[in-house]
Length: 224
Image 1 (cartoon, rainbow, N blue to C red):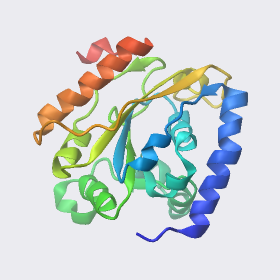
Image 2: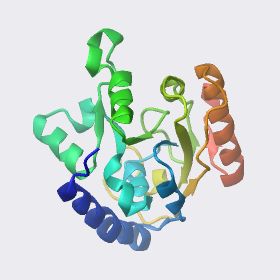
Image 3: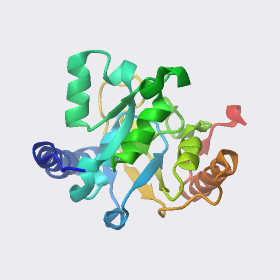
């Protein structure tokens, strides 16, 4: 996989030297060392989702040497609903745009096929299994697509990431970023214990339940 020099340099400049200091000192995002990700050939980051700050915070937390080959999976109907918006999203955020309503018969445009191809091409992914942004400090039921993807790509590790405070700084529908202590908590790169998507999903849910207990965010009881 050829490194896109211009985009790689730009992503490093924007996320490490501009966005990260801004999020840390003006918003209150607290970072942890995740340099261990440089030792992983590929991975899928699985994170909870409360805010548009989530993707930005994740990208600014990554080692700058691997930024260019980590693609946040994003909704095409939101981040790529025009050709210009799609190009800007792909260049400035390095997105992998998918159609959330695609079906198997859509072939290469089927969301699962697009994610699989990105992995085959050597990229790592950022996924938010809850789908859309939820209520601040509340975690909703995760969808099983990530488990099916991991079942389809044996040997690929996932990294659970748990974020708190983002939904308070910039909640869904909010237009102004409010200073608030927010944190990112990285779990260990983990291999699925099974090739069964149902078992993989149970493993992921167990990891996040442990994080919920440790870091104090509330789970969505309506989805039980």
